[in-house]
Image (cartoon, rainbow, N blue to C red; front, side, top):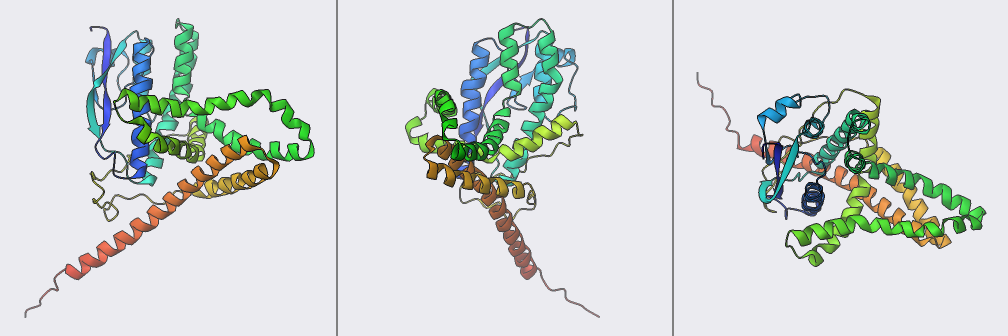
Length: 344
Protein backbone atom coordinates (compact mmCIF):
# COMPACT_ATOMS: atom_id res chain seq x y z
CA UNK A 1 0.00 0.00 0.00
CA UNK A 2 1.72 3.20 -1.10
CA UNK A 3 -0.15 5.26 1.52
CA UNK A 4 0.84 3.08 4.47
CA UNK A 5 3.33 4.70 6.83
CA UNK A 6 4.05 1.62 8.92
CA UNK A 7 3.02 -1.97 9.53
CA UNK A 8 2.63 -3.11 13.14
CA UNK A 9 2.84 -6.79 14.07
CA UNK A 10 1.63 -8.36 17.33
CA UNK A 11 3.81 -8.80 20.38
CA UNK A 12 4.35 -12.30 21.69
CA UNK A 13 5.68 -13.16 25.15
CA UNK A 14 8.85 -15.22 25.48
CA UNK A 15 8.46 -15.56 29.27
CA UNK A 16 4.69 -15.48 29.67
CA UNK A 17 4.63 -18.27 32.27
CA UNK A 18 7.61 -17.11 34.33
CA UNK A 19 5.52 -15.66 37.17
CA UNK A 20 2.11 -14.27 38.01
CA UNK A 21 3.41 -10.78 37.19
CA UNK A 22 4.43 -11.80 33.66
CA UNK A 23 1.11 -13.60 33.13
CA UNK A 24 -0.79 -10.45 34.11
CA UNK A 25 1.32 -8.33 31.78
CA UNK A 26 0.78 -10.80 28.94
CA UNK A 27 -2.99 -10.66 29.39
CA UNK A 28 -2.93 -6.87 29.35
CA UNK A 29 -0.77 -6.67 26.22
CA UNK A 30 -2.88 -9.34 24.50
CA UNK A 31 -5.93 -7.14 25.09
CA UNK A 32 -4.15 -4.16 23.58
CA UNK A 33 -3.09 -5.97 20.41
CA UNK A 34 -5.88 -8.50 19.82
CA UNK A 35 -8.75 -6.09 20.57
CA UNK A 36 -7.67 -2.45 20.70
CA UNK A 37 -5.12 -2.34 17.87
CA UNK A 38 -7.06 -4.80 15.72
CA UNK A 39 -10.31 -2.92 16.35
CA UNK A 40 -8.86 0.48 15.53
CA UNK A 41 -7.33 -0.80 12.32
CA UNK A 42 -10.46 -2.69 11.21
CA UNK A 43 -12.68 0.35 11.82
CA UNK A 44 -10.37 2.75 9.99
CA UNK A 45 -9.32 4.65 13.12
CA UNK A 46 -5.83 5.82 13.94
CA UNK A 47 -3.58 3.55 15.93
CA UNK A 48 0.03 3.70 17.00
CA UNK A 49 3.32 2.03 16.25
CA UNK A 50 4.34 0.17 19.42
CA UNK A 51 8.06 0.88 19.26
CA UNK A 52 9.06 -2.57 18.00
CA UNK A 53 7.70 -5.49 15.95
CA UNK A 54 7.04 -3.27 12.96
CA UNK A 55 8.50 -1.58 9.89
CA UNK A 56 8.29 2.02 8.69
CA UNK A 57 8.26 3.54 5.23
CA UNK A 58 11.16 5.95 5.21
CA UNK A 59 9.29 8.53 3.13
CA UNK A 60 6.47 8.61 5.69
CA UNK A 61 8.90 8.95 8.58
CA UNK A 62 10.64 11.87 6.92
CA UNK A 63 7.36 13.48 5.88
CA UNK A 64 6.13 13.37 9.47
CA UNK A 65 9.26 15.16 10.70
CA UNK A 66 11.42 12.21 11.74
CA UNK A 67 12.11 10.90 15.22
CA UNK A 68 11.82 13.48 17.99
CA UNK A 69 12.62 13.31 21.68
CA UNK A 70 9.98 15.77 22.87
CA UNK A 71 8.02 13.02 24.61
CA UNK A 72 8.89 9.79 26.42
CA UNK A 73 6.85 7.79 23.88
CA UNK A 74 8.48 8.87 20.64
CA UNK A 75 6.79 5.97 18.81
CA UNK A 76 3.30 7.22 19.75
CA UNK A 77 4.27 10.78 18.88
CA UNK A 78 5.58 9.81 15.43
CA UNK A 79 2.50 7.69 14.76
CA UNK A 80 0.13 10.60 15.31
CA UNK A 81 2.31 13.02 13.35
CA UNK A 82 2.21 10.62 10.40
CA UNK A 83 -1.58 10.29 10.66
CA UNK A 84 -1.97 14.06 10.79
CA UNK A 85 0.24 14.27 7.69
CA UNK A 86 -2.24 12.07 5.82
CA UNK A 87 -0.59 8.65 6.09
CA UNK A 88 -2.35 5.41 6.97
CA UNK A 89 -1.09 2.38 8.89
CA UNK A 90 -1.58 -1.38 8.71
CA UNK A 91 -1.87 -3.99 11.45
CA UNK A 92 -0.55 -7.52 10.85
CA UNK A 93 -1.94 -9.42 13.83
CA UNK A 94 -1.02 -12.77 12.33
CA UNK A 95 2.69 -12.00 12.61
CA UNK A 96 3.98 -12.48 16.15
CA UNK A 97 7.27 -11.05 17.39
CA UNK A 98 8.27 -12.58 20.77
CA UNK A 99 9.49 -10.16 23.40
CA UNK A 100 10.55 -10.37 27.04
CA UNK A 101 8.25 -9.08 29.76
CA UNK A 102 9.78 -7.38 32.83
CA UNK A 103 10.13 -9.85 35.69
CA UNK A 104 10.99 -7.18 38.26
CA UNK A 105 8.07 -5.20 39.65
CA UNK A 106 10.32 -2.16 39.98
CA UNK A 107 11.09 -2.46 36.26
CA UNK A 108 7.40 -2.87 35.45
CA UNK A 109 6.60 0.22 37.52
CA UNK A 110 9.23 2.24 35.63
CA UNK A 111 7.90 1.02 32.26
CA UNK A 112 4.31 1.93 33.13
CA UNK A 113 5.41 5.35 34.37
CA UNK A 114 7.20 6.04 31.08
CA UNK A 115 4.27 4.84 28.96
CA UNK A 116 1.75 6.83 31.01
CA UNK A 117 3.77 10.04 31.02
CA UNK A 118 4.52 9.76 27.32
CA UNK A 119 0.83 9.21 26.52
CA UNK A 120 -0.17 12.32 28.46
CA UNK A 121 2.61 14.31 26.77
CA UNK A 122 1.35 13.23 23.35
CA UNK A 123 -2.20 14.12 24.38
CA UNK A 124 -1.16 17.65 25.37
CA UNK A 125 0.86 17.94 22.16
CA UNK A 126 -1.55 16.57 19.55
CA UNK A 127 -5.14 16.86 20.79
CA UNK A 128 -5.38 20.63 20.15
CA UNK A 129 -4.30 20.04 16.53
CA UNK A 130 -6.66 17.09 16.15
CA UNK A 131 -9.68 19.05 17.39
CA UNK A 132 -8.86 22.15 15.33
CA UNK A 133 -8.05 20.29 12.12
CA UNK A 134 -10.22 18.69 9.43
CA UNK A 135 -10.53 15.40 11.28
CA UNK A 136 -13.89 13.54 11.40
CA UNK A 137 -15.67 13.75 14.76
CA UNK A 138 -15.57 9.99 15.37
CA UNK A 139 -11.82 9.97 14.80
CA UNK A 140 -11.34 12.94 17.11
CA UNK A 141 -13.22 11.17 19.90
CA UNK A 142 -11.36 7.91 19.36
CA UNK A 143 -7.98 9.66 19.30
CA UNK A 144 -8.87 11.48 22.53
CA UNK A 145 -9.80 8.25 24.28
CA UNK A 146 -6.67 6.59 22.90
CA UNK A 147 -4.21 9.26 24.04
CA UNK A 148 -5.84 9.68 27.46
CA UNK A 149 -6.32 5.97 28.17
CA UNK A 150 -4.16 6.13 31.31
CA UNK A 151 -6.61 8.65 32.78
CA UNK A 152 -8.59 5.66 34.06
CA UNK A 153 -6.01 5.39 36.85
CA UNK A 154 -6.61 9.04 37.74
CA UNK A 155 -10.34 8.34 37.99
CA UNK A 156 -9.63 5.37 40.27
CA UNK A 157 -7.49 7.61 42.46
CA UNK A 158 -10.28 10.19 42.60
CA UNK A 159 -12.76 7.48 43.61
CA UNK A 160 -10.50 6.25 46.40
CA UNK A 161 -10.41 9.82 47.81
CA UNK A 162 -14.13 10.50 47.33
CA UNK A 163 -15.38 7.30 48.96
CA UNK A 164 -14.40 8.30 52.55
CA UNK A 165 -16.23 11.62 52.12
CA UNK A 166 -19.28 9.86 50.71
CA UNK A 167 -19.33 7.30 53.52
CA UNK A 168 -18.98 10.05 56.12
CA UNK A 169 -21.86 12.01 54.60
CA UNK A 170 -24.03 8.89 54.38
CA UNK A 171 -23.49 8.14 58.08
CA UNK A 172 -24.92 11.54 58.98
CA UNK A 173 -27.43 11.87 56.14
CA UNK A 174 -28.59 8.37 55.07
CA UNK A 175 -30.78 9.87 52.37
CA UNK A 176 -27.64 10.84 50.46
CA UNK A 177 -27.30 7.33 49.06
CA UNK A 178 -30.76 7.53 47.56
CA UNK A 179 -29.39 10.14 45.18
CA UNK A 180 -26.95 7.57 43.83
CA UNK A 181 -29.43 4.76 43.39
CA UNK A 182 -29.95 5.38 39.70
CA UNK A 183 -26.20 5.59 39.19
CA UNK A 184 -25.71 1.97 40.21
CA UNK A 185 -26.04 0.98 36.56
CA UNK A 186 -22.70 2.66 35.92
CA UNK A 187 -21.08 -0.01 38.05
CA UNK A 188 -21.58 -2.29 35.07
CA UNK A 189 -18.83 -0.38 33.30
CA UNK A 190 -16.35 -2.00 35.70
CA UNK A 191 -16.92 -5.22 33.73
CA UNK A 192 -15.45 -3.63 30.57
CA UNK A 193 -11.79 -4.53 31.27
CA UNK A 194 -12.77 -8.12 32.10
CA UNK A 195 -14.69 -8.38 28.83
CA UNK A 196 -11.77 -6.83 26.92
CA UNK A 197 -9.15 -9.27 28.20
CA UNK A 198 -11.50 -12.26 27.91
CA UNK A 199 -12.35 -11.47 24.29
CA UNK A 200 -8.65 -11.07 23.54
CA UNK A 201 -7.87 -14.56 24.82
CA UNK A 202 -10.75 -15.95 22.79
CA UNK A 203 -9.52 -14.09 19.68
CA UNK A 204 -6.09 -15.61 20.14
CA UNK A 205 -7.52 -19.12 20.47
CA UNK A 206 -6.67 -19.59 24.13
CA UNK A 207 -8.82 -21.16 26.83
CA UNK A 208 -10.23 -17.96 28.26
CA UNK A 209 -12.16 -19.77 31.01
CA UNK A 210 -8.90 -21.04 32.48
CA UNK A 211 -7.47 -17.52 32.38
CA UNK A 212 -10.50 -15.91 34.03
CA UNK A 213 -9.08 -15.85 37.61
CA UNK A 214 -5.90 -14.19 36.31
CA UNK A 215 -7.98 -11.73 34.29
CA UNK A 216 -9.87 -10.75 37.44
CA UNK A 217 -6.56 -10.32 39.29
CA UNK A 218 -5.51 -7.89 36.57
CA UNK A 219 -7.98 -5.37 38.01
CA UNK A 220 -5.97 -5.35 41.22
CA UNK A 221 -2.72 -4.75 39.33
CA UNK A 222 -4.31 -1.78 37.54
CA UNK A 223 -5.54 -0.31 40.82
CA UNK A 224 -2.05 -0.66 42.26
CA UNK A 225 -0.68 1.60 39.51
CA UNK A 226 -2.96 4.59 40.24
CA UNK A 227 -0.41 6.57 42.25
CA UNK A 228 2.37 5.75 39.79
CA UNK A 229 0.23 7.06 36.92
CA UNK A 230 -0.82 10.15 38.87
CA UNK A 231 2.84 11.09 39.31
CA UNK A 232 3.43 10.58 35.58
CA UNK A 233 0.42 12.77 34.73
CA UNK A 234 1.59 15.53 37.07
CA UNK A 235 5.09 15.52 35.58
CA UNK A 236 3.65 15.70 32.05
CA UNK A 237 1.27 18.52 33.05
CA UNK A 238 4.08 20.44 34.76
CA UNK A 239 6.19 20.17 31.63
CA UNK A 240 9.27 18.93 33.43
CA UNK A 241 12.02 17.58 31.16
CA UNK A 242 11.68 13.83 30.89
CA UNK A 243 14.53 11.32 30.88
CA UNK A 244 14.16 8.06 28.97
CA UNK A 245 14.88 5.26 31.42
CA UNK A 246 15.32 1.82 29.99
CA UNK A 247 13.29 -1.07 31.39
CA UNK A 248 15.69 -3.65 32.89
CA UNK A 249 15.39 -7.13 31.38
CA UNK A 250 17.52 -10.16 32.13
CA UNK A 251 16.96 -12.72 29.38
CA UNK A 252 14.91 -15.02 31.61
CA UNK A 253 12.55 -17.54 30.02
CA UNK A 254 11.77 -20.25 32.57
CA UNK A 255 10.81 -20.36 36.24
CA UNK A 256 14.17 -21.85 37.17
CA UNK A 257 16.05 -18.87 35.72
CA UNK A 258 17.47 -16.63 38.46
CA UNK A 259 17.77 -12.89 37.82
CA UNK A 260 18.06 -11.38 41.30
CA UNK A 261 21.85 -11.73 41.49
CA UNK A 262 22.42 -9.82 38.23
CA UNK A 263 23.83 -6.31 38.34
CA UNK A 264 21.16 -4.25 36.56
CA UNK A 265 18.73 -3.76 39.48
CA UNK A 266 16.57 -0.79 40.39
CA UNK A 267 16.37 0.72 43.86
CA UNK A 268 13.15 1.09 45.78
CA UNK A 269 10.79 3.82 44.61
CA UNK A 270 9.90 6.26 47.40
CA UNK A 271 6.39 6.52 46.00
CA UNK A 272 5.58 3.41 48.06
CA UNK A 273 5.12 5.73 51.05
CA UNK A 274 2.13 7.35 49.31
CA UNK A 275 0.85 3.94 48.27
CA UNK A 276 0.99 2.70 51.87
CA UNK A 277 -1.02 5.69 53.05
CA UNK A 278 -3.61 5.29 50.29
CA UNK A 279 -3.90 1.54 50.93
CA UNK A 280 -4.57 2.30 54.61
CA UNK A 281 -7.21 4.87 53.67
CA UNK A 282 -8.96 2.36 51.44
CA UNK A 283 -8.75 -0.24 54.21
CA UNK A 284 -10.59 2.13 56.56
CA UNK A 285 -13.14 2.91 53.83
CA UNK A 286 -13.67 -0.82 53.32
CA UNK A 287 -14.36 -1.37 57.02
CA UNK A 288 -16.81 1.56 57.16
CA UNK A 289 -18.56 0.45 53.97
CA UNK A 290 -19.05 -3.05 55.35
CA UNK A 291 -20.45 -1.70 58.62
CA UNK A 292 -22.92 0.48 56.68
CA UNK A 293 -23.87 -2.21 54.20
CA UNK A 294 -22.51 -0.23 51.25
CA UNK A 295 -21.56 -3.30 49.25
CA UNK A 296 -20.64 -1.60 45.97
CA UNK A 297 -18.20 0.75 47.71
CA UNK A 298 -16.89 -2.17 49.76
CA UNK A 299 -16.02 -4.11 46.60
CA UNK A 300 -14.20 -1.20 44.99
CA UNK A 301 -12.27 -0.21 48.11
CA UNK A 302 -11.27 -3.84 48.60
CA UNK A 303 -9.84 -3.95 45.07
CA UNK A 304 -8.02 -0.65 45.67
CA UNK A 305 -6.63 -1.81 49.00
CA UNK A 306 -5.44 -5.17 47.64
CA UNK A 307 -3.93 -3.60 44.52
CA UNK A 308 -2.02 -0.90 46.37
CA UNK A 309 -0.89 -3.28 49.11
CA UNK A 310 0.34 -5.75 46.49
CA UNK A 311 2.30 -3.00 44.72
CA UNK A 312 3.99 -2.06 47.99
CA UNK A 313 4.69 -5.67 48.97
CA UNK A 314 6.16 -6.54 45.56
CA UNK A 315 8.29 -3.39 45.50
CA UNK A 316 9.72 -3.87 48.98
CA UNK A 317 9.94 -7.66 48.80
CA UNK A 318 11.75 -7.84 45.48
CA UNK A 319 14.12 -5.02 46.48
CA UNK A 320 15.11 -6.88 49.64
CA UNK A 321 15.50 -10.22 47.87
CA UNK A 322 17.67 -8.74 45.13
CA UNK A 323 19.85 -7.02 47.74
CA UNK A 324 20.31 -10.32 49.60
CA UNK A 325 21.05 -12.19 46.35
CA UNK A 326 23.63 -9.58 45.32
CA UNK A 327 25.34 -9.81 48.71
CA UNK A 328 25.51 -13.59 48.48
CA UNK A 329 26.91 -13.39 44.94
CA UNK A 330 29.66 -11.02 46.10
CA UNK A 331 30.48 -13.26 49.04
CA UNK A 332 30.62 -16.34 46.81
CA UNK A 333 32.87 -14.55 44.33
CA UNK A 334 35.22 -13.53 47.16
CA UNK A 335 35.49 -17.14 48.35
CA UNK A 336 36.28 -18.45 44.86
CA UNK A 337 38.86 -15.73 44.19
CA UNK A 338 42.37 -17.28 44.39
CA UNK A 339 44.77 -15.99 47.03
CA UNK A 340 47.78 -14.27 45.43
CA UNK A 341 51.14 -15.99 45.95
CA UNK A 342 54.11 -13.69 46.63
CA UNK A 343 57.59 -14.61 45.57
CA UNK A 344 60.81 -12.87 46.39
